[in-house]
Structure formats: structure tokens, C-alpha cells
Image (tube, rainbow, N blue to C red; front, side):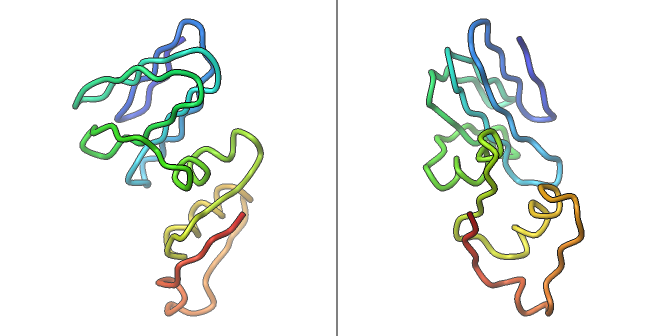
Length: 118
């Protein structure tokens, strides 16, 4: 199986993988749930085993995803929405996408507030 986005290609012959890659987000996220997978970008490649997750920057750089990043980017796999210590301006687009409804801040000043939602 091969899955491609604008900045990353994920290939696995025996695994189950999750990929989150939206053009309006600064990073893509890849997680291997079962088996293994190879993540390829313009900057290089990395092989991941079950339970591992990485973030892929706009420059193609691959970095390990910490728990908070994994939860926020890939919680959808388990039916969970999460945002961990992020500015509200970054969380609103994800909320709109998740719930398919308009969500706005009451005032522009709120957009800089950091929020955690689960």
C-alpha cells in the first residue's frame, strides 16, 4: 500500500498507517498502528515500526512526534479530537473540519489564547 500527500509518501506492505496532511497546516503527521512503514519526503526517509509516529515539516524534515503532537494530529484515528497547548487561531480550523460547522472566536483577542481540548 502506498499513500501520498503533497510532502510525504508512506509505503507499507504489512502495516496499518494513519496520515494527516492538510495543505493549510504546517506539518503532516504519520503514525504506524501495526507492522512497519517507510516515510519518504524530499529531505529523506525513515522506517517506522508499530506505535511510532513522526511529523513532517514543510521542508520535508522528519522529526519524532511527542505525545501531545501525536494526540493532536492523529487522535482522529481513535475518534478523538485533541488540541494541546495551541493558540486558538490554530485550533479553530481543526474544530471546523472535525465538526463540519462554523466555529468562530467571539473577539479577535481570544485568538492568541492557548487552549487544550480533549
